Length: 249
Image 1: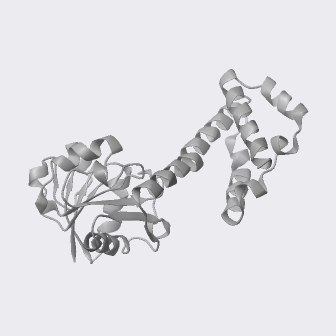
Image 2: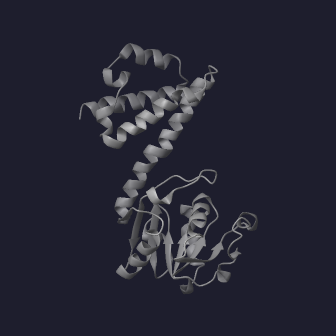
Image 3: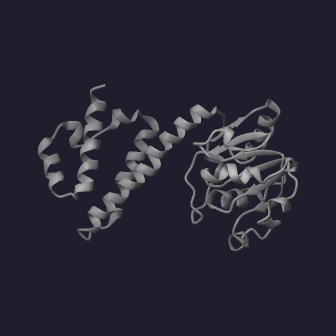
C-alpha cells in the first residue's frame, strides 16, 4: 500500500482526492492547503494548513499553481517522501528537496465536471529509477496511459496543450460574442465543434482544414473583416495567414 499525501485544494487536487479515496492500494494520509474553508470539503481524511502537521508519506503530490511549487516544497520535510509536482511547464528543479518528480496529467480540470482519469495521459519524470517506479505504481492505479517524459519534451507538450485548449477556448469566446451580438444561440455551433474535434482524432489537422482561408476566398474574408471588432480582426488576419502558410509548407 502506498501512503500518499496531497498538497492543494484547487481543481486538480479536488479530482485526485475523489479518485484516490476509493482505491484500496492507496492510503491517503492527509491533505495540505492554505484555506481552511476549502479544506472542509476533504472531510474523509486529515486536513491541515500547517506543513509540519502533514503526516509522513511515501509520495506527496503537489497540485498547486506553478509559481507556488518551490515555496510549498520548501516547507515539506523528508518524512513526506518523494515530492511530485503536477505542472506541465515546470521542470524537476522547481521542487526544493532531495527526492523530486513530476506527475503531469494532460487534461483541463474544473471542479464542476466529472473526470475519468483512466483516459488521461500521465507524463512522469523522476531522478532515480526507484522513485520513477513508485510514481508509476501510483499513476497506473488511475490511468491506462503512463508516459515517461523529460522536462524539455513536457514543456513542448504543454505549449501544444495551450494551443488546443486555452487558445481554442478563447476563440470559442470570440464566436460566442459574435453570435450573442445578434441574439443567436451558441449551441448552433455545437455540431460543428464536435465534428471538427472528431476529424483531428484520425487525421493530420492540415489535411482536414476547410474554409475561406484555405480556398483563398478573398471576398468572403473581406466581408468577415468588415463586421468584426478591431481586436477580432487582428486575430482573424493572423489565423488566416497561418492557415494559408500551412497550406504552402
